[in-house]
Image 1 (cartoon, rainbow, N blue to C red):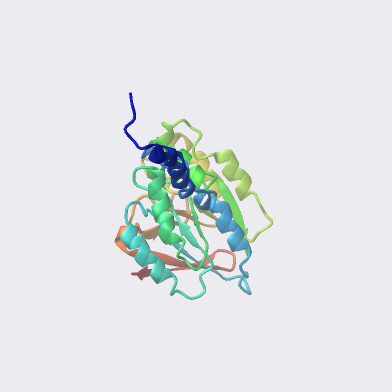
Image 2: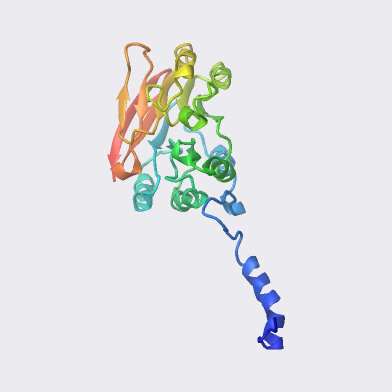
Amino acid sequence: MRSFLPTTLRALLPVAASWLLAGCEMLEFSPNESRSPKSQQDLTAKNLARLAQTTVPAGDTLRFVFTGDSQRFYDEAEELVKSVNQQPGIQFVLVAGDISDFGLGREMRWVDDQLRGLRMPYLTVIGNHDQVGNGRAAYQEIFGPLNYSFVYGDTKFVLTDTNGREYNFNGRIPDVPWVNKELSDNSVRRHVIVSHVPPQDADFDPAVRQPYLQALRSDPRLVMEMNGHRHGGGISVPEEDGITYVNSHGFERRRYMVVTVWGDKEFRVKEVTF
């Protein structure tokens, strides 16, 4: 077919295309695209590196913000950031999963656009909504490992994937041998484990529930088990296992928790409305 574009314009098309590609770190061809620009890759590692550069508070008192289930609540994310930035002495923020609603990388990046406004690092654990479609790959691209731990001061935080239903209850999620290994660390004073789905929930793999709870019960350094998923914040200590559970508020509740930890297993939780 004969082209009716002037010769000069036809010659400029490849140049224009190269300008377009150079001006964007990434072109997204599908809403399920799991790739991300370099500035929004490996955010867990980047935030941990940022945390490592902060000054550990004197004494053994640790203070952090706990929240979860940001999903599609972008306006609330902006307001949460403004509120958290006004809190004194916060070392970091923990987000207990469901960063996205539909497992889309663009959703995770939109939430990061807001949370990177925090004056302190933030760290996440993967939620069940983050695994919809290509979400698991997107989460790993944008944030990083599904299971990881870090030490800050005298406390080791163990963050693990407990979204058993998303693996068709295959008997391997959470990874109990990995959890046991992390909780066997006696080089620190305290342990805190963070996940999305609490072990009492129907979305937690029933085949793994008792081995997981046994791992927690057997740890003399465990302060608490922290979860998201249920959107309503609360603290409970069921008689049958004696473990302290702290559940976060979802962003839409416009509340978050300021958690202070000290001593061996002493802690205080203050709820903040924004």
